Amino acid sequence: MFQQDGLAMRATPHEPPAEIPLSEAEAIALAYHRAARGDAWNALVAAITDALTDLGEVERRAAQQSRLISRGYARCRTGAN
Image 1: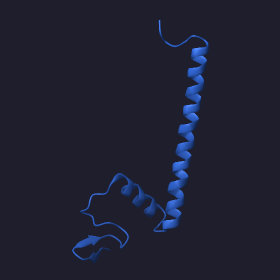
Image 2: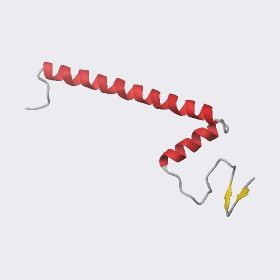
Image 3: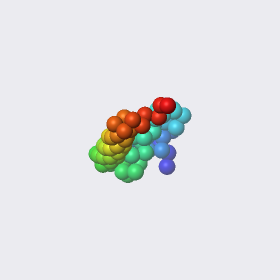
Image 4: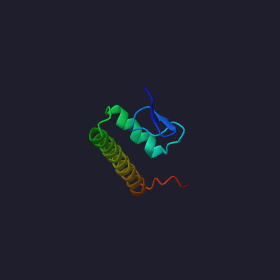
């Protein structure tokens, strides 16, 4: 069902009008909000959990890459001739 909100039609009271393009951050926030069935707190916790998980993975990969680079320098395997 659509509700009339001034001149804009919205799917629910918590969603932006369909004719307004969303930024990437807004689209992600809306997806989390929908996945949490409108529960803003659970949506926020899920988004932060996913962000921290992704950050941890990036840090793990960076540390692994750093170790590989350090080993390469220590063994004179820099890739240079």
